[in-house]
Image (cartoon, rainbow, N blue to C red; front, side, top):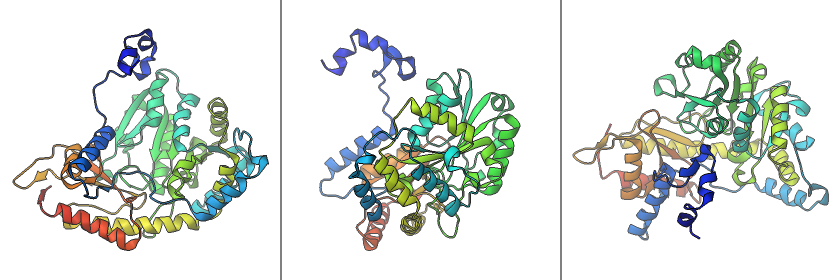
Length: 417
């Protein structure tokens, strides 16, 4: 039977309401990433032989460091590493604690009780609501942002309250935008800095404010920090846990996906409040049996060599400089981020004497279809598009060629802002 035929059977009636219930699969809305995928396919078909420049991919463009790969091969061949890892090996937890101290100046993390490995940040964000959320409880999320923790809050019968990230507040949430009634019912507050998609970085002063707010309202802070070590132009990597009082109110999630080019390896860690880490471990025990021990040992090697990340950050910084310069020559008001590999810019309102763009999605679709340049639209809090500097380029000369080609393709129109 086809999917359509099965939709007429009893199976269709059994789906949980959280994914659409009896209407699951019948929604005709097309989500933005599917629209981008379709537009890219159509543009390539209509323009055979023309390079599609993909500035929308949110993952590294290179393989993991050769030393990490070699360590994986070495450890994968050892019979003692073949079994279940459950909640992780001490070697990885100790490497994570040392990494936090060396790179972020986080003191006092107990590897035994305040660190656990995760199979990447995404599963951790999916599991954390199960630790805290009862029906009617609230998770505070920022928009634009990464929605996974909010999605699982809703799955559990909780509610999500969104706080906008606005340019005038440096894309930091204004805590005064959270009503007292919401603060009283909130269990979790999700933060992510350096931020996806805005590229904004937090400050110690902001984290001090957040910690005081969390203590006042008895809210748990979850700081998602997969880009924390990717900072530029003298900005030092900042951990939420480096701020006094942070461990009293929350945890931080780290991932090797972005900072070590290990996206598909699925390895990261949660660190911070020992009671939260313990409870997370209990939930995790009922969700997975741990990441392959050889991957944990290879990741521990990576964490012990943060210079790997520094070289990656240098590349992204160089590419940001090129992209910001090119876009600003075209009339954009792009500002180089202090962290992450994302560049978040306001979409133009239209083309002088021509097409209007009523949203970031309108502009993104124009660039894909007309210029074969792919980006990601974000219209949650204004009309923006997100470029990623993880585009494919063979070397530095090729990076310049790609950016010059973007500038050339967009130079035959005059944008209005």
